[in-house]
Length: 138
Image 1 (cartoon, rainbow, N blue to C red):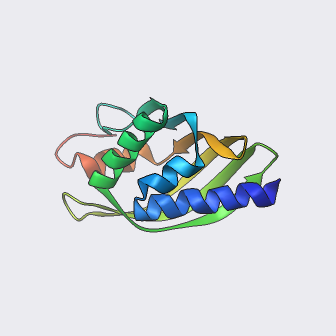
Image 2 (cartoon, rainbow, N blue to C red):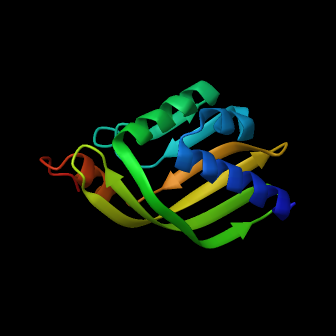
């Protein structure tokens, strides 16, 4: 099963890099739940997003604010229906041009060969500071 999960992850991250919404739809369960951990008052897309349309809106919001310059997996733990990836990433804030070099963890849940759950554990304080340079974000 891990080869099938690796294939789905490959398609998921390719869609993320390119912003290909049709590719997202092809790998997402209809009732997918996405959660970005962080303060929603400082990170506009933080919180929980349910269903394909809400998840597509979530990715649209993230893509409008951040450019993915580079993301590479450092570690992968994969089971029959879960995957945990620790990533090293380079993002650029579109509004300011500020570069972020951070680590994050992504937790996936799979059902019927599709992504049913996706949770992001970022350095939310660094994202909040980069998105709100004039605030006193933690």
